[in-house]
Image (tube, rainbow, N blue to C red; front, side, top):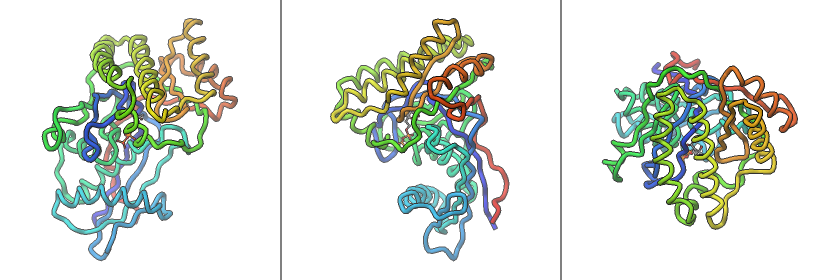
Length: 333
Ligand code: DP6
């Protein structure tokens, strides 16, 4: 039996990926930069079997929805096309993310699936090629292939040239003891899926082109700050980049607004922390939850301050830097 299991972790972008120039290949408009977390791994097992007439997908053992199964099957089609092995597979994916934590993006899932499937189907991919494959499942998954701080290059061109040049790689920087304090403002499912929101932003928001230009400057400055071990500058840029991304969405028609009243309350608290001399900077993705970047030594104080605003300590998770995707042995079937 060639049942292969891989594990991967979520990542949080400090310079965001928002907008595609190629919807099929998931080629981004901008280069993004993220931190892979230690917490909330997703484990995915892939077992190609000759007798199957379709891919069979389960979530921690329970049958997956048709939509999710279809997304996994389309991804496996890419792997089968590359390997020449036509067999369908049993796929199980189990994640440990608290429901709606705003970390449950598809990043960890598709990074684990890419590694498990490439291995099970005998594709011999170097890390860059693996990252390009993961990108085809979900853009941000390209980054979860690697641990720590990671850059995902936008690449140049479209079609094959774009596909080859848009990959993620780890950034070699001096160790930085950063934490991300996640504040769960609202764990309900978002009204507008991020894919649709991105598309609408790119095609209708007058604020989108200036954000793209600003993002390139953010990238250069953040890479320099990371090299210098300057967490304050990294945090300031991350917050500016995220607020800018949300501004582009507010300018879309119809407008997309993920920031809720609770989000703004956390942002106020983060500002108060800074006024009190504690380095803390906020970033938000396609939802109302807030991730607060800070020095690990301040994470307990930041968590306590933010818990007062969101109402309960269970709504706070302290996350730290973690590793990239790895094979974790044979599956359990
Ligand atoms: C706001 O990677 O989930 O989290 O490529 O359409 O699957 P698709 O999008 P996805 O988008 C993530 C958007 C973001 C910002 C980021 O992670 O960079």
